[in-house]
Structures are given as structure tokens and as C-alpha cells.
Amino acid sequence: MPTFANPVLAGSHPDPSICRAGEDFYLVTSSFAYYPGLPVFHSRDLVNWRPLGHVVHRPSQLSLNGLGISDGLWAATIRHHEGTFYVVVTLASGRRGSTTLLFTAHDPAGPWSEPTVLDAEGIDPSLFFDDDGRCWFTACRDAAEPEVTGPGELWMRELDLETLALTGPTHALWYGAMRGAWVEAPHLYKRDGVYHLIAAEGGTEHHHAVTAARSDTVTGPYATDPRSPLLTHRHRGAAEPIHNVGHVDLVDTPAGETWAVALGVRPVDGTHTLGREVFLVPVEWTARGPVFAPDTGRVRPAERLPAGLTPPARVTHPTAPVRDDFSGAALGPEWNSLRGPVDHLVSPRPGEQGLTVRLSPEPLTSTGTPAFVGRRQQHLRMRARTRIRFTAATPAHEAGLAVVQDHHHATLALTTDASGTPHVVLTARQTDSETRLAAIPVTNDDVVLTVDSDESGYTFHVEDGTGTTTLGSIDRPFFSTELAGGFVGVYVGLYGIGDAEAGEAHVHWFEYGPAC
Ligand code: 6LW
Image 1: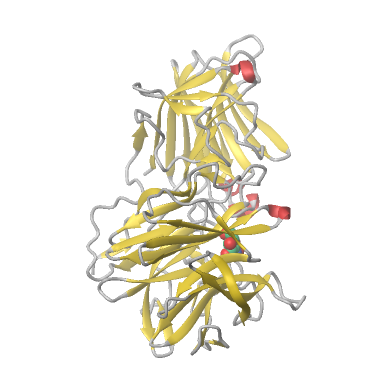
Image 2: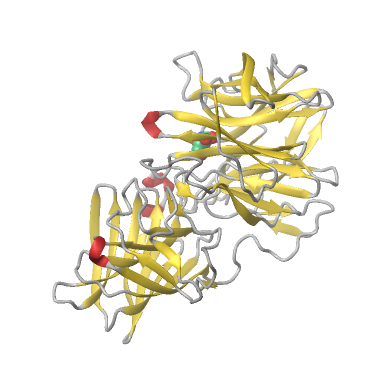
């Protein structure tokens, strides 16, 4: 039986939401403080996903400035109704609380509208369009009972599609199957007249699970589906390659099947670095409700193909090294900056090849917009290389490769010593500490910098006129979510730090790919 490989969207793509319009599927994922925000992907086969653009693609829509990397845009839901695409999302601003935003578009590739702020508390907003044309907004918020841990109440209110405002009474729908263990990510579905409320419970780590409740009326009361949890890997041991599964969204195919996208992680020795990725899971509707992965009850690394959808050659993530020589007018959609556009700092050279990185005083640990662009690490065994030319005037000026996991990161940079001899320096950084791991003189200011990652960790090399030198390695857990914290996965990219007179670096090319 032909199969596809899970995840269908590798690397840091948490909290997936999916919808269908005709023969086309669209998917959005969380993007936190990375910019542009809320990537939108397109597929005709549920297996291969092509980046279309982003919902947040203009600074006028919102500001991410001042936010931690794992604050920002959390858990969007995408829906299509009568020719309009809707995205609702939480803008989580740390201690400043959260705001619920609604965007619309006629073309999911954009442009998307300016946001409408909804009068809604909590996180994980979703929309459900009922057969009678009414639209229902759901989300999760802290429950009234103080003993309930984290978001514990799923609630609902009608969305007026004319005014794009919530209207009518608020309905408390359900408190979860496990009474308040982080009841989140509600989505509503209707089957044979029955409303199915499907949620995530247990928190987005090891105890993550899918639970459900059902009702004959959209506003409830909802009764817990006694089969809950309907999907979880929390009882599976270390041999299971996929863990933390949950946060599902369901979609029907033109062939009449139902599939779910779910988040999951691929840990090594109990920790994961790539972030929460998108997995595809078959669903079977029965009289009692949805059955996830009916054959095995688990999210599988190799899953049968959806019926009637013949996937073309794999396009979702590179199966061989891809070299970007930056010959286009703009960076591709896989490139992200932090909190806002950096065209003024990092830009292709019109009509030429190569990327200019103008150094900025902003460190990578700042909550501003440093001179940094990165792409998600999508392969555990990975190699990223770049050829860069930079003449540092002082040891305080540096430019090169960065590996970023929330507030943990490493840099492999071209700089200079006090005598003006070009050096390459390997540094590990956290918000409040910096460790220089290695520094070697190089024969010139035009070198190739390389980082290799595998189960053991990240190893850094430099190629200059004398050949290739390995500067050192950093153990993989340093770049894991378990140690670094946060909600994101590793990004690898380019950066430059220096004062206003620091000038600019020239990046000839950047290459990323799986390592054998
Ligand atoms: C998301 C919520 C969650 O909104 O993490 O742990 C948030 N649970 O579902 C960010 O991914």
C-alpha cells in the first residue's frame, strides 16, 4: 500500500488549522514573534504543502515589537465561507495579556485585511459556520474554579458576519474530559445533525491528548464523549518516534474521507529541537463520533495516502540541499525575520546575486528587530552552509551564521581581533549569558561557514584558504524546547551585529538541506 511520510509539514509549524475550498486545501500555523506572521500553505493532496504567503505581511496590521520569541501569534484557525477566507488568532503579549484578531481575504495568498479586534478573552479562537448561515466563535479561557490548571473552559458567542463583532449571549460550553487539564484548541464540527466539540487537553507536551464532547444544539449543553481521549501518545514509550500529539483540526476531502492535521514532535532521547510539526491523521466518523487513526490509534510516521488524491513528487521540504543565491528581488517565503520587516537591513542586491546584511546594534536576544533572517530547521540531520564576505573593523562587529531556539542561540561569525586579523568565532548565547567556545584566525574575510546537526548536537566548521577547520560542537539539548523553553523550533540563518559604522556583510549564497 503506497504511503506518505509524516510530518507533512516539518520544522516549527505548531497548532495547525486547515480548511478546504473546492479542490484546494489551505493550512495556517502559529508563528509567534517571527515575521511575516501566520504562514498560509496550499495543497491539493493533503501531503504536499506549498507556501502561499502570510496573513500578517504588513507592519500596519500589528506590531510584534517588544515581545519574546514565543509570544506573538498563537494558534490561528482558518475557515472558508461563501468566497471569503477567515483567520482568527490570539496575539499573545506576555504579561500585557492577549488580544483576539480576525482577518479576512478573498484570496488566501493575500492580501489579507487589517485585523478586526474581537471582544474575546482567552486563547485558541475558532469559527464554525452552521447550516443556517450563522457563525459561532469559540475559544478557551480560564475557568471560574480556581483549582483548575490553565485554560479550563471552552466558551462560545455568535459572530455577526456583517459587523464582524461578537453578539448575543456568551455560552460556557465544556470544561474538558479531564476537568481542567489545559482544555484548549476547541473546534466545532457537525455530523448528521450532531455538534461535535473537539479539543486539546493535557497541555502541549507529553500528556497532550484529543478529547471531545457532543450536543444536539450548537450552544449546548455538551456531554463528554466517554471515548475521550480520542487520540494521545502519552502512554507510548520512548520507542514511539512521534510524541505530544494533539491540537487537531479536521477536514473532509472531495472523495468523502475525513482527515485531521495534528501537531506532534519527534524527540531524541526525550527532547526535541525541530519544534511542533504538522502530522496528517486519518479519521473515521461513526455514530458515536470521530475515530482518529482507526487502524492503529496512533499517528504514524508512514501513513496510507488519502483516497483520490495522488500526491505529486514531494515538495513540502527539501529532500536534497537547496542553495539560495538570493538572485530574486525579495527573499523567499521560507525566510523569516523577528518581529518586523528587515528589508532595510537584509536585502538581495537588485540585478545581482547575493544578500547584503547591514549590521545592526540589536543583539539576537533583543526584543526588537535585529539584522537576522532565518529558516526553520526541518531535518534532524541537517547541514546549513553559507559563503560570506565581511571585513570587521573592530572585534565588536560580527556577521555570519546563527542557530536560534527561542532565547538560546549559537553564532558562527566572521569578526576580527584587536590586531585586525580576521577571525571566526563560535559563541553560545542565552538571554543572560554568553560563552565564547572557539576563535580561530582565518586567511581572509571571505569564508564558508557550516553547521551540521544530528542526534548528538550541532557542529560548526569554517573553510578558508587553508581548508576546513572544525571549531566545536554544542550538545543537541541546548537547542531543545525542553531546555530553552518556549513554543518554537530551531531556526538557522544569517545575522550581523555592530554599531552604525560597522558597515555590511555580503552573503554570496546560503545552502540548506538534509545531511545523510
Ligand atoms: C497555543 C495553545 C498552547 O495557543 O500553546 O500549550 C499555545 N497550548 O494551544 C501556543 O502554541
